[in-house]
Length: 209
Image (tube, rainbow, N blue to C red; front, side):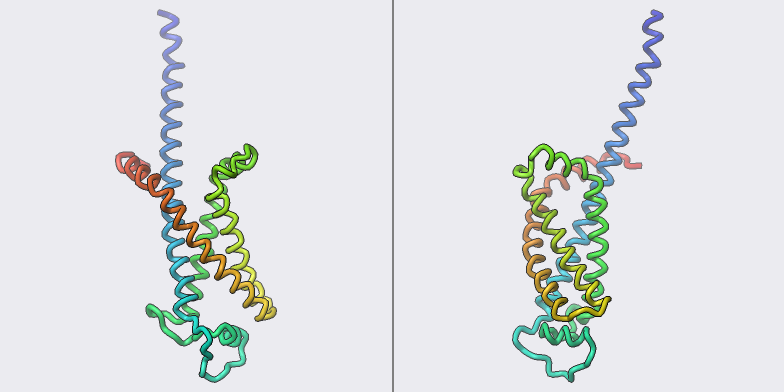
């Protein structure tokens, strides 16, 4: 009897520990679900704005007939044969460029946080030589890094007053790699669709507070 009484506090501590663990797991799942959904939404806006800039404003071999304005930004857009005065979905090229830059910054911050939260997973994949089994996620991460670098470098070149030709080359590379990134993002979304559905179903009956 004495032994049973002595075990009661230990049992209560074990129950409390399990409840705390379940609460932590629910909170972690909730945070992952929110971050992944934000990545999805911001990523879609980023892809759409990028495609609008590439397809909606690109003029192919046609040249702009407007007077040449001697500023670096306009000269650059003329060099790329882009009509900066054209309106697409209610916005001109500078507006879409600003939107694209803002969502890129938001997406990059979310990706940094996402990588930080899942850093143990990345480390485990590398140290345990599991890259082959997770090559789609690894390739997507590396591809995003290249897209981010080739997208950020032109900003620094523009802010530092560097060569427009060099800036153009980086943006052209950025545009082409982005098309590949879009394909892998779509494949990744399809692959994780079941996780979104199952997680939402679990959360619908769970108090996340």
